[in-house]
View 1: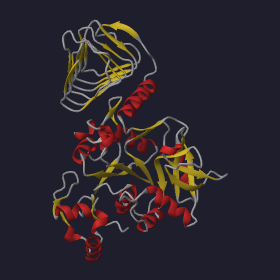
View 2 (view 1 turned 180 degrees about the vertical axis):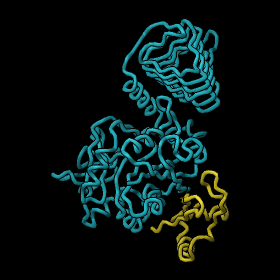
View 3 (view 1 turned 30 degrees about the vertical axis):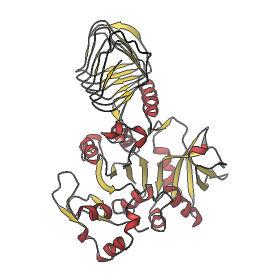
Length: 59
Length: 357
């Protein structure tokens, strides 16, 4: 199973794609980081794979 | 070598305590469980740690650990969100780990042995993984490893009816980057999770070597209220083995008794070590504490006899009955019901509860 995650360019905090997809846009959960992270920042291939296999990423 | 500390999971076996706090912050001997993992990494010389957070209580864990500097480590947070399994959590850490080897530590585990032997043995080997194993009496309840004459793992089976050995897979592993490729090839198990045992099995099927490291010392997966009490008992005993049974004045704290400098122990209190009393706590009016008891910060105890228990903190315990073998959540009140004697009930009480005994 492909595990898709995004690394915050400001603080290095890593966020799994399932969190990004649920939030659409989120403030980086890193300590005192104000970067905005979003599902759209994932590569097109990662987004396509995630959406095509959505059931795997949800409980 | 980096460290990956798992701090997700729902903590369902620790309800109601975990209804309001993540299980990794439940205190044992007045230190949150997760702190033992952080210290184990540091003592093994691993200071770059990725902490994997679930979707429950993650801000509280971040507030406690901060950037790690208070504990002498450097923490990167990894938000897994949904608990999709240990292998999914590890997979989320791939960018953090990079091309390094890493030690995976389950954040609700405590080990008496340090990690150095496992880390050194793995680093000096050709193996792609090393798995900590422990001898157990009931292997049917664990993931169980089969090992060969060289102590290399040959098979891992989950909760087998007919276990191949008594060696249970414990909550610490060392991996090289090959594990990420194995995880990419996994499919979710029947319970919808990516299992770490399945990743290990794939590495074995690839013909790669997996070492085992048998843990001789005490260990505990702190998953249930009775596990918290047992871990508390063990850690208090090993950290403060001297015992005492005597009445004390404020200035006379017996051996085996750890009392924070901001705690108040009034005359006539009986303290039986080993116990730990946190700051801003008041013990008085003939209260009797211990043995094997941790009283968390901001707690007041009067009259009561408390034994083999963990009081998380900010609680008020004034019952004239005994509180024994109990785990009390933050903000609990336990008071007397006049003329209603109780027979030392065992309590597991969530936050802000009021119990009348």
